[in-house]
Image (cartoon, rainbow, N blue to C red):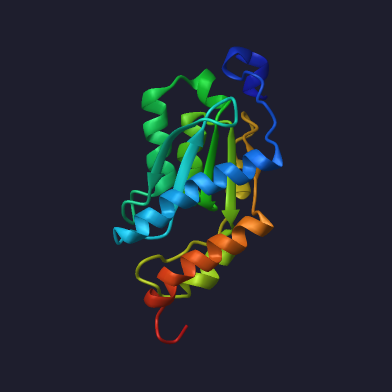
Length: 181
Ligand SMILES: [Zn+2]
């Protein structure tokens, strides 16, 4: 049974995103990713946008291989805001959130995920045996299928934005791919 029928107060209506808002949210995450790479971090980043679909509330870059941008941001968001508020927010990510991050977003009760590049595209960039990222073979929607109580909206991959994200991220991954890939 969907939780919205039992505790409707935790599921306020979410304002649909316009294409311009989607582009702006991805851009906010990409700006963080660009900066992160200059500090030697891996090219992953996320931005939390508020219920108005415009205000950037918090951002996070990838810290290391167990402190990913999206799950770190989701934990931070949950410390700052209420469930009711977060249900109306959107987490924008340059890349498709992994299993750990998708599940943390679920527990943080963030109502919408938008990502630019897909996990399949990431695997192509990182290649096999990349010690900086042993990319997993699963998808955000597959993980959320196991969570029937909440209908977290997922938008992505985005054709145009993913091209930019792939191109920029490849500058990092091309240096870390194993020789055989
Ligand atoms: Zn992750």
